[in-house]
Length: 132
Image 1: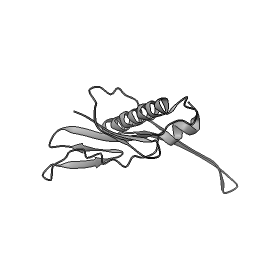
Image 2 (image 1 turned 120 degrees about the horizontal axis):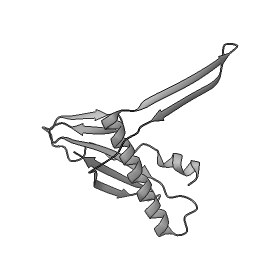
Image 3 (image 1 turned 135 degrees about the vertical axis):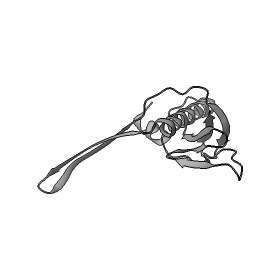
């Protein structure tokens, strides 16, 4: 999978990560997702785009769905575990010559379920996942 394709899959999703929260539910937005404290569920969204080198439309759609699901799982981990951020800035002659920022999340997602799936006209797929 190309780096460009991977980067485009990591875009922020527009699906509401609050899921099926009721008006009386205590819902907290947490980074790329939300936590429904009333129901005890964590929600996160992900979006995937079809790769340009897919063999056919069916493969492109399946790959976009899989990418969206992986991004949503990563976002679940970010909500539950937080994100580690490392950065290095190099300054020479009062000018920034290098600025590198890396993020990392590490963990295992168990028991997540698909809540919603949206197919967009541009071929991308958006999913909302939840776990207790």
